[in-house]
Length: 228
Image (tube, rainbow, N blue to C red; front, side, top):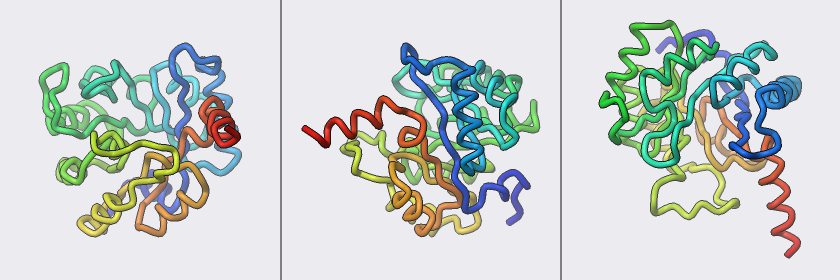
């Protein structure tokens, strides 16, 4: 199975998610661009970021690929929920567009597969499928997505999302077993270098870490909680 050169460039590498939530002190495109550049200097192979302003600012600051998404809302499908959101990310400069790969209803009525097909028809951008279950991963692979990620696996209702859970290695191993040639990305709860190493050893094509690198409020709270 052949992969796009961009996908090949990520093999065995670290992708850093650079995001700040609305209302937080770092929530500014220029700040996110500076953070992204710092991560690039540290060896990140790509940056994952949210929002049109951040995508554009970061794309203008780094030389590594930018994985863009647009979050809208907090429930259901909120990661690049419609074709309009996806194409806006393309226009903002994203090299890869990430979108929710679940089969939940989307605001514009399209299915995941129809959305991917429409993105392909209207742009040359690569597509990253953000998955919750093994069924989502299968859906992403079947749709021909360039990258398929475990991004949402900790969002399953039965999962207790505490800091020390670590990445979802069981779903990663199952995905790699079923699709040994696919670019399966491990994302979610990669809080330490040991977590990243474990994900790579479990067969991940690449590993995404975000909060542990670029979200000082969360990192500080971990230390504070440990001292209580």
